[in-house]
Image 1 (cartoon, rainbow, N blue to C red):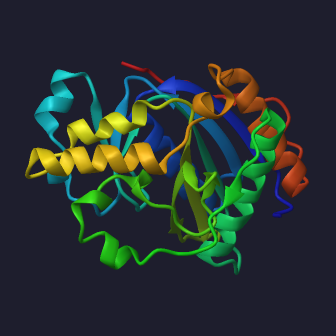
Image 2 (spheres, rainbow, N blue to C red; image 1 turned 180 degrees about the vertical axis):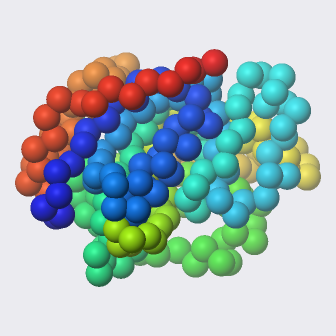
Length: 257
């Protein structure tokens, strides 16, 4: 990995807008030559639906979200909609070098797999790449967790971690921002109820797809997730897989409401 010193950030709970802004600012700072590579862990308060950078906002029922106290934010990365609820979110900002998108996915997923193994969960990487151009024409593809991309993390062929990536350029070189959701409970499937699907049958289909194709740590382990322990395992996973020394976290907390 990069010889540059890395920063480990524990942001705790914060709003989706704050988290998306911080992820992008860390990436732009590194691209400008002023920042450092970083691993950041955070959670969402209140729960929020994030849309991919180019995803139409009209796919989400904004009025129902507002009524239930669910924020809607746009990610600086691509991909499809996610309801961020019972999850631990990771964010990696690093120099891109000459690595392809899939190479970076593979490297980050390898570190996450190691971290999850330390937590006691054995997972695998998706080996095939779906035809997203075709899948995105279907309403069932609106949720990110409806399908797995190559090198995304699965448990028994069910998606456990969903990730998205973007590259930034600047005087400091090309920089990768990749962030993703490690599912800790099944609240993410409630996204189906917030989609502006044209008919109720489409929402029912999407709910069934999410139930069938996703897994979460509470389901896998049979107990509530120990968030501090999970975060420590993920940090150690990156250290062991990449040969890093991340040390104590830099605490960055912003207003959550």
